[in-house]
Length: 89
Image 1 (cartoon, rainbow, N blue to C red):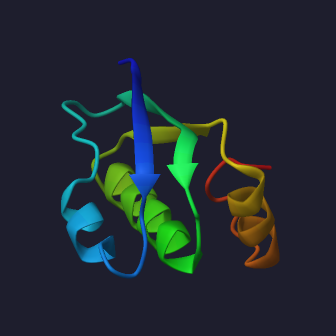
Image 2 (cartoon, helix red, strand yellow):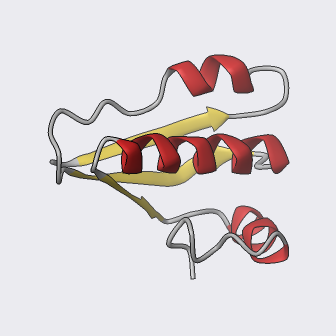
């Protein structure tokens, strides 16, 4: 389906808006790559949004792949034991 770049910051201040901007997956079985290389200042709100996006995609029968995640986000995902859920392992 392609690659979508996520840029800027997803933080506590804008997490609710980010949740409403989940990637749109048009069909069951679709796969979308999300390039996280331009994501800034990842924190637990960022992680929560990515988990919610993943859950929404799975409910739609689709898959999100997170690519080039910043090291800080990878570390936080490992600490929270969700790196496998997000495919960051």
